[in-house]
Length: 418
Image: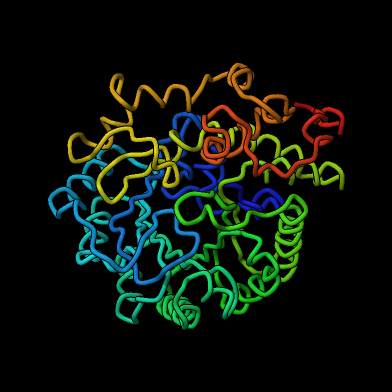
């Protein structure tokens, strides 16, 4: 996850301590010292756990990685099993818990799950299509202390409705944003960038501004589930989208507006941003380099900084990589699976997590990622997308939009000290 606002403007953002090891933290030590929750290194971070609590959904999104629908699916975790997951994640010290689906709000005991998780001290976020939010639910989210409600939007008006497969879903999502704002609940817009909606970028950014949405996550498409039929961005489209996000962040800062803009599932965004800073002579380039060095990109993402529990209780390296199963919370606690020294997890995680020396890890990577001068910062892109494209985890990420000249030119050529 790349925080464009933080890297381009230098302004501290929520969860900086988890992404970059410094800055804004979600806890304070005795006496008010900030960043008491900051991990000692990016490799020591406990994972953010994405938990798909149900596969049932009231929409029919064309890019759904869970292939969800308005059906009931057998084998989902019962209440006692859900409580066991929450209690274990709290005891383990998971960095955050993200409730997802399907549509998580259709789960018959969704509010009970929220109350238990927050009551156990977990930092909880919600990923929802926004159509089921009511004034009562929005107020309750605020009362409980939900960190933020992430509402998915994939375009404006009919573009969104076409993605979601249900007419009127855009207006219902807009209503969800409005109700959360009226309740004082922090909201985040979540959007998957594709060739079908990139032409709406300016409108989407205007929508964010007009609706005072504090946090926005732009996901680079990971072609899995129904998403294999969706077109990914071209190199020029990806670069144009990044330029537009950077320009808007600059504009919002000049206007004194608080807007947290992030991109997800493409660590190369950080390299693109850094090179752009270097070419423009930005005084923040050296600080950006330090933050990216601490973060480690894809090397500290899937299977280390991110984990997934699916609707059946199966544990995966992330929510997209469903073909790799590390264990099942019906049989063992999540923490035991994630920290196992034997079993299915250990057949995959050591390779995925890799050596502490990024150059040793890079020796195993094929293609453009294997020769890239910025591997230590990027970690080889998003390993899940690389695995899908190549049939194994050590291929190159086809979603990287850096030019050959950019990947072959060391940062020292721009006059920056490493």
